[in-house]
Length: 199
Image (tube, rainbow, N blue to C red; front, side):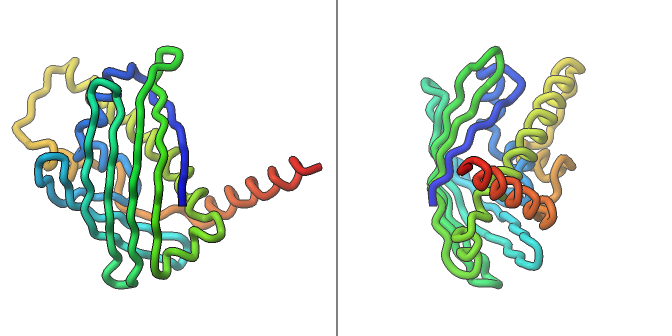
């Protein structure tokens, strides 16, 4: 299943690029995600919680991040497994940052492979809608974190903690699922939009 999305971040591309290279901090901005180990060389271990109504799965896995500073683009390859429910997932993601009206446009394409109980949601379009809701929340958290970092720089606050420890302490996002009612409303809007566009 392939998903293409774009998001806009309210800062310059240089600032956004520097932020996105701090993977432990970026992970705290994604709902349901938690980083457990930084292995170095762009390799990470972590967990992702997915909760859709009564369905709940916690994927434990690994990811590899390969950035390209010259083009402000990168690749992320990951895989995970829900040991309790038996669901499995693989992700191949490409992203690119560019300037748009003084802000940063982030375009990305993801190829997601699902197996096990979670695969049923991919067949009915729930994954696409869920990804959009996650992105909206992710952007809010990214902008909040970038603003916090800017305030820290202005105040010249120094910390001896590592980026990973700071990420684990962050209170921006706690692992949680997407609201079932919010997801159903999003699916209904998409259905009505398609229905009226045919007339």
